[in-house]
Length: 407
Image (cartoon, rainbow, N blue to C red; front, side, top):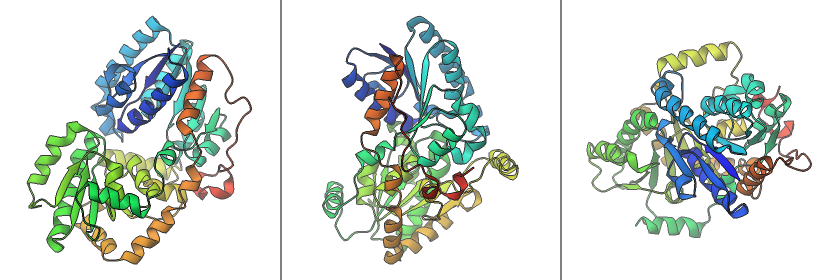
């Protein structure tokens, strides 16, 4: 059995690596190949081209990646025609994987989409997106409702992070702090500039400058900065060296342990915000795109094709402003430092935020998500129906969904 896996950024590489491990347990002789990064490779996938560095958001931001993505497409198409995989798993990387899926289906390869284009941005295109795949595996209940309503063969499998990130308890928090050499009474702030190159370059300086301002006002603060990829180390270290942190900022490798130790997280909006949500960590989100992209988004929203103005997953999933979002012109070091200081100075507000974030896990939790994805892919590779009887997630009911997801 041969299976193709296609990812285009760090979050997809992580999820794909987990699915690949599950696949090889279920089908030890399976041949896995595709495009992605180090997590896929470590899981036993033959990587034809590294693509983690190509992840981007926005319109103008995507232009610089087009030549590399075109090269990846050509390489994959040649490999498909030579190896003839029975099925393909396409994770995230919205436009690229939609186009690839349509080509694969014409080539006779069954296609499974995992982490489809998110409906709060792409709802108006949910019908053609869904038609690109033999199955669409959704991690958020509103995605399931929207894609199903538009004819997609969608299945709500839950979010795998719910399986991997149990709610924090005092012992886990203490162990995480001890592992970083932090005292129980110290105030700790996690800084996450994102996993895409454009995010690190745009938001990294803002996060680090804000941290320096916070430290100037409270020299007792401690900062943890997890790196999404080792390739960002030199750039981040150079940014940190511009400010007098005097050993109060530590660059680390594990975002989840950093969250476990933190009182507050300042971060780029993305999958990491869901990690923080499931671990009950208050946060401030940053989001910044080019002026051309934002002008295009404004036009699309004016035409009624985008419903949600919010970008943060905890806010989108609950339909409430649970955590502050600093977007575009508001995403400055001064505004971020002021917002963070207000939260650090108000333990009651942080506690209320933690309690509100607990509302998210029940929306997303389904045991064995990764194994369910692997089972779906193997069934499609063997030409079998999956699931045997169609599953409709109890969570994907109108009364549990934010109002913007209906219709």
